[in-house]
Each structure stands twice: as C-alpha cells, then as structure tokens.
Length: 418
Image 1: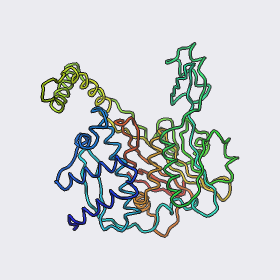
Image 2: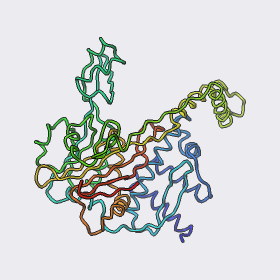
Image 3: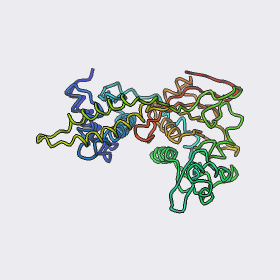
Image 4: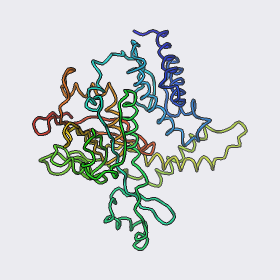
C-alpha cells in the first residue's frame, strides 16, 4: 500500500520530468489534480477550467481546452512511467471523465520491448523506412477559398460541388492539393518521434510524389489513407480478409459492411424544451459570474446560453465510432515490409498509430492475440480497430482505440474478439 509521502514523491517526479518540462498546460492540470487528490476531491471539467484556465480562455472555450489538456496529460504520464519513471513502484492513472481524479496503480514492468517487437523490420540496421500520407483534393475558388468534400476526389467529381458553387461557379474551381489530413499528419509525427528516440531513420512524404509501388522498391513502407484518397490503399487491400469501403469495413465473403462508421443523429427539442434549457443555462451562468455591484447584464447571459445550448445539442452524441484496418504484409519488393492503416477518418488513423507506439497497449494486444513473449509477429496479419472520435473538440483527436477483430496469416487462420 502506498503512503502519502511516496504519493507526493511520485507527483513531484512526474511534474519535474522531461515529459512535462515543455508542457505547461498539462503540468498545470496535474498540479491542480494533485491538490484536489490530497483534499479527497474529484474534479469536473468546469472545476479544472476555473482552477487552471479562467484567465486564459473565454468561458465557452474552457471545456475544449480542459479536455485537450487532460488528454495530453494522460498521454505524457503514461509515457513517463513506461520510460523515465520505470523505477517507481506505483504509477499515476487518470481515468476518463467526466469526473477527473487520480488513482495509484502498480507500475508493473512489461515483459520485453513491445514497440521493438512490432516495428522490428523497421529497426534493423541500414534499412530505409518511409511513411506516406495522402494529400486530399481540395477545390480553390478565385478568392482563394479552399473547399473540401470527402466524396469529391477527382476531376470527374467536380459536379458534386454544384450545391455550393452553382453550375457556372463550379466550372471556375481549380483543383488543389495544398493541405494534408490532420490525423494522418499527427500519426506520422508520432511515429517519427518514437523512431527518433530509438535512433531509427524514418522519412516522410505524400503519396502524390510516387506513382504506384515502382518507386518504393527500396523502402519499408508505412502507409496511411482511405480508399477515396489513396490509390495505394485501394491496390494493396485487394483480396485481403478485411477491406475498407466508403462507409466502413467489409469482411471477405460477406455482403455489406461488417463494421460501419457511425453517423449520429439527434432528435431536436421542441420550442418549449429549447427555451427551458436555455433559461436554465442562463441562470447557471448568472449564478457563477454575477458581481457584487449587481451590474450584471442578463441579456449577455441569455446570448451566451443560446450559443452554449447549440454547442451542447450538436455534441449530444459527442463520440462517434470510426473504424480502421491495420495491415502488415510483405512488400512486393523482396526483403521489405508494408504496414498500412486504412481509415476513412484521419483521426482514426492517428488513433491506431498512437496505439502502435504504446508499450502497454501493444502488450495487451499481443496477449489477446495469443502471441507469446518470445514469438515473432506473423509476416501477414490484419486488425480492425474501433476508434471513438469526440466532436466536443471539433474532432480534434481520437479518444479510445480498441482492437475488435483480427486475422493472422490472412486466410490461413483467424481469431475474433468482440
């Protein structure tokens, strides 16, 4: 059982660690949670917002800022106890909200290096590694406005922009490949960081710089993209046990999608329900922000409550489920391998990549797949991941990543979990 003195030592070590040295927001949140922990109090998003960010953000922006900071803090803390803080007997754990608190758990050391086990072909001396992202098609108008529609990815799809630009205006739009998928870019940077920490080389580029696989004959490849935006994904997933479709994942030999990307719908409130909820929100804000001179402007409260109501309604079903397929396979070019993350949502690809550099999650995955510590990974396998993406922060990050089904050696053997 850990006593208070050791708990305080662990907090101090994490707060002064290299992981949090340049992460001021996360360090501030951890210090606040530490204070609440020793006072036997949990914290809501509002508590953390008022305690850490009241002077830095507008009230309506606090929930998003807090969730982002807690998510990054959770990641930093987990990485600290895997690396710099492996010597601690106990580690800090921050469960998912809405009530945030601190838990102390045994800091069990993992058997072996799971990161090295998964990425072994890429960590061999002298190999060349390349991570490729897609460069989605945008449309640019004469005023330099960039428009993206996920179903408009070729010149032949121009007509799909008529609902925005009109039949005449759509003819003036120019194709542009000026931007990247944020999720894929974050996934690539995550992998590059971890390769750098292990002194392993990893180059990056966009798929548009390469025509098929011919120019990729000297690389171990890491590929991220969707069937809509990547010719390579379309090519490489042909004949596999799992294939990414426009709406989800299809299993070989089955009709329709076995897993469908979720699109949430919400039944709107009646006029009476809407006004009642806005009135309640306005009163809550008045209670929190009224001043001593009674100069409070109730009209401001009402306008704020209307905006907050709309935000909350749009986020009612704030977690949407997306799916991604991880495929490991030998490259057509002898002696090289390909790791492909196929996903219709860039944040789903990012979530899977963050999973694949996490020692704890990889160890859990290997155990579920019944891969023993001394076993090498199969040369060919696929894993379907379910990734929840939050709309509360503008789909800015994946929240949970769960492997739901896998096939080892493709059609030769299979294992399924639910």
